[in-house]
Image 1 (cartoon, one colour):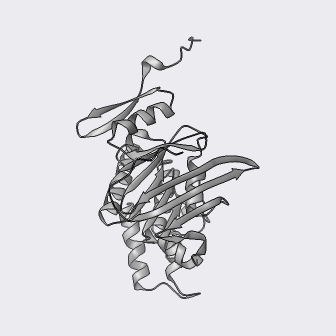
Image 2: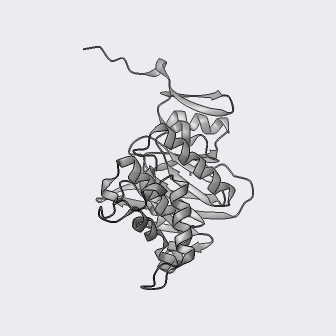
Image 3: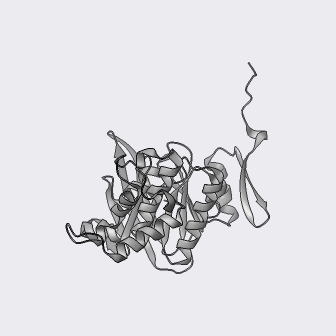
Length: 272
């Protein structure tokens, strides 16, 4: 039984029932059950190999799985692909796009679910692309080929592509990869704006301190959910620490939570 903390009554954006998944013939998710409230940011945390990315892929229906996943009240696999792509945007790890495409063309790919077959972009599409590029501070590169950008710049363009969908639900797997600390802060501001607009955001992060800004946390270990609760709940903090073998500590700093290594629990390593 997953340890789930009941949230205040809100519509459910994504739900999962008895979800299992395997990779290369090995089961990596075990009968997961969850409900994610609409209009909230939920972050998935856990050590390497916990199954975080696999869970996110199952929720996005980009990975085969058993069990049921519902999106905005409908079984996700029953939705037409076009409708699903309009309602749910996905940013995966190490995503690629053709290096010879310009930035604006890459971001315009996010508008494909809204366009008729072979129809050119309309004014609404162009406005959505511009908003997304300005949001991620990538507008000045709009005519540059993707291949000329650094890793962090590419990541901001791929985020803009996901934002351009203007979906009700946004799933992101390690979206802070290659971003320096100032741009990680910018990403956090984007997420907060999305939540204020009613978007549901689900992310997998390794940056625990940033994850502690989320509304709720899902804590995973060994392919199972060990806790799902509000971020400010002390029980959630204890679950996070336990998932990392109590080798981190969570402290209040001003009006936010900060996760730091607990040096008293670090293994002794003899100097060379």
